[in-house]
Amino acid sequence: MARGDLACQRRTRREDEAMTRVRIRLDVPDSLLNVSRWVIDALLYPLGFEAVWLDSGEHDADIHYGGNDADKSARVVFGFAANAAEVYSRRCAVDLTDVTWADWGGERWPVLFRSDRGEPDLVASAWYLLCGWQEMTTQARDDKGRFRYEDSLQSKLSIPLVPAVDGYREQVKQMLIDAGFQVRQRRWGDASWVVCPTVDVDYLKKWRPGMVYREVVQNLALGRRDDPLHGRLKRARQFASQFVRRGDLYRDSLRRIIEVIGASDGTATIFLKAGAHGPHDVAYPLDGGFVCRLVTSCREAGFEIGLHPSYFASQHPDYMRRERILLTDVVGETIRSVRQHYLRYSIPTTLRLHAESGFEIDSTLGFAEHEGFRRCTCVPYRLFDPYADKATGVWEMPLTVMDGTLFNRRHLGADGAVGATSQVMDLCERFGGCAVLLWHNVLWDEMDAPGWAQHFERTVTEARHRGVGISALGSALDAWRQSL
Image (tube, rainbow, N blue to C red; front, side, top):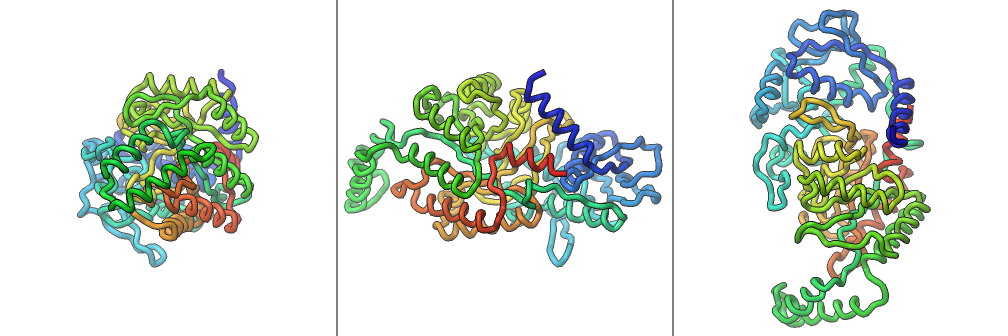
């Protein structure tokens, strides 16, 4: 048995021993049994509960979920929508007109399924959103092969910043408290929530031959940016200044990111590439002096190194496996975390590649076009394979904000980007989750990324002033899982 597997088993045993067991009876069609168990676990685990599953004929349940003949002896009864089984079995989407709204504490929350008596089916609504059902039942993709924000329920219902699954969990929590259960919410060490800075290293150097050609020929000589002459000359001067400076902006950016986060007593996850297989990848050597020094600096600072797979690796088993092995050899320790290049992720292919390659944590599942909650949660959860109808061993640390989203897609300035990030952080704090934030090592490049560094520095400062933990993905998840 591998050392990492043994450590994972020990963590699991410690978690199980500390959790409160609840007896749960499910009276659902066989097609819904596995997904219902998975999502109920996902709702209860952050509250400190472990499910003990009863046979359908057993009574004395603490929680009952199933048909209209609800077990009246159960202390908590979840509403059940009979049509959820048809949606799951036929792999069809929920009709937008079937979405209703619940008023909880003066706030409106979307409900995707209701029982015949009109009760919200929190379980079915949660699995639909949490397992990526809408991604699986939507064919449209963007030019990078990604599920588009515009096709999502979040866009159509105007709820990008509504973590609906976390809202459902709050309702479950109140039901358990009303039934006399003691809830022990998981924590992130000494804090109730956490900020997880991450950095995707797409390039190690800015002024590569292709970039020089872009500036000298395409921009200056041919005017491909459609700038007036004075604008082209201004940019040419900026290029010349950067080109002759000592060192490289992108490498300096990595050093400064580590310094800024370290000065706030934090850590981060740095995602490195280990392969290049097409025009969307830029190769860089992992055996060079800079990467060796970077790995040493990260290790000394308590930072985590994760894999940023090549563009086509999201669909290619051999690329994924080889790149993880290569990066493991360079780093000298098991690579636990992964985030796909360009956030390319498909169900079930990428999900299965991560599990089969031995990753423990993914942090890909955010929207490229909008900040917020792609799977409607800011809380970690184990991913579910709806085609195989089973849970995987991979934890999702949900991506909430990406710098390129704020500046390139939403066209915000530095102040707007900081405000949007702060709003997401407010929600993560409210629901005891993790604000996973993605930056690229283009910070402090005011020629091509104006305001990005300011957004980074102000966000880290805000996190420090809030008194929240600032942590790499792996150490954050470990602390949360072991917190009881």
